[in-house]
Image (cartoon, rainbow, N blue to C red; front, side, top):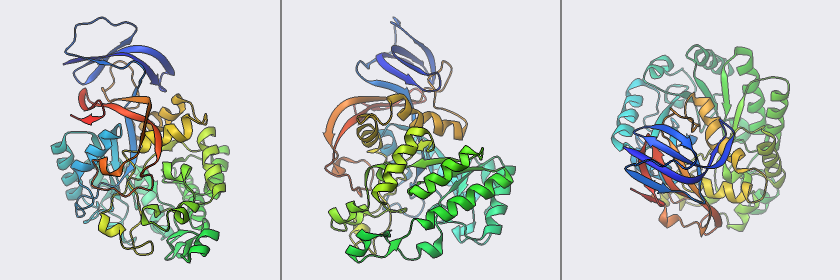
Amino acid sequence: MQILIKAGRVIDPSTKTDAIMDLLIEDDKIKKVGNDLEIKVDRVIEAKGNWVVPGLIDIHVHLREPGFQHKETILTGSESAAMGGFTTICCMPNTNPIIDSVEIVEYINKKAEEANLVNVLTIGSITKGQRGEVLSDIRGMKEFGICGISEDGKTVMDEKLFVEALQKAKEENLLVFSHCEDHQLAADGVMNEGKVADELGLKGIPPEAEDKITLRDINLANEIGAKLHLCHVSTKGAVEIIREAKGIGKKVTAEVCPHHFILTDETVKVMNADPNAKMNPPLRGAEDVEEIIKALKDGTIDIIATDHAPHHADEKALGFEKAPFGIVGLETAVALSITALVETGILTPMELIEKMSTNPAKLLGSGGSLKVGESADITIIDPMAKYKIDVAKFVSKGKNSPFHGKEVKGKVAYTIVKGKVIVAEGKLV
């Protein structure tokens, strides 16, 4: 099968390419990239006016299966990812049962294979049952293909045990995805600590809860030589700690989510404490958002991820204090990022794709490039498409988003995985 993508704006940070070109796919590989390719092929995709970029990679997704299929399944999550332009996703371990054994990793691998849509990589739990007491079978899970370990949704508060996990991750050459939150400081908080929380009479989560563990984890990982990645950075303090650490040669990577560079805790008030504005870490203050945007521009923050966290409408209807944390993000990330970062001149298209494809690919060890011979994982984006976000149109089971009704610019036109067209003209094939 040969597919010719014609006259698109090819943006490839791995080769610093930004030019109007054609791209030829043969079976599951990129065969040629050049000008005016005149080849008889099975299919032509006219990409004039569109960006042709390496397949987007989301390293932070909650697929909910096994155990919470009423929220999302591996199939619906994969469909949602494809609609959002993501060709590879990494799924977090807080399922039921927890992803802490070879058996559960095998189950997810099988389900992802059956879905046959996007590349699904599994992240194993650091501790058994995410109870923070005993390490999971990290070596066994590595043999079955996990890309990293995490306690996401929680922090391993036992420092000695976390050190053991870092040592094991180093031995197995695995990434450690860290959710930085001091449980004692966060306690039973439901939103950012501060003036807005006080006005609404809601218990706050202080930024220090994130900052303290950010510093701890960077220092411990560097002492041991483990590969540390910081999830969903949300505070000015955490950004400053990361920037300083990188400045003195400490190794760490970090991600931020669109909701944390667009919204503030004022959003909770504006939305009348709608639980669709409740996530963890919570929406922070304007100064935090300002610092995160600066960090995206100067490279302190390496990656944009979604922390896609679907919930059933009934769960989100429990009210702000009782509703679960989390919002969906796979189908809105491209539009939100283009609107908030590219249209405003904060990032160039090249810089955006670097953060949504090339940099996460470097962490995972594959993808993120349109070089000849690479896997044909390709996303085609119409950067000029204007529309309003409508949660009713999401293919994800989760409709929990604070961005419903928001006017945005930028839409995924095609998602191609290993040479197979999954999304065409903005619709699942």
